Image (cartoon, rainbow, N blue to C red):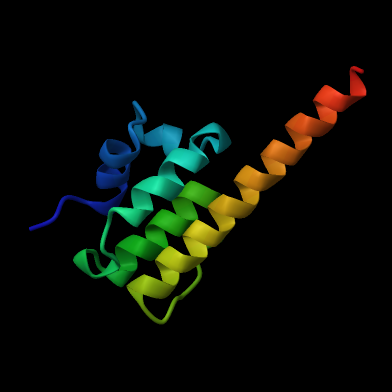
Length: 95
């Protein structure tokens, strides 16, 4: 039997604590960790819980574990790009 998805993400992403999963500074690590996990190894309920916990969104239904993983990765990528853009803008304002 597989470990709980959230615990597996802690392990695979290299963060220290479960609570680190919803820290935007961890999103890039989580994004890459998701590539190493098969969506079918975890229940749809676990994927929905992961989306809710990591992104801080209201629980939403997904048609499949794969669709929940795709959504989670897309949102993590958007957040990481947004953070990168904000950092660049802050750096440029100091010129």
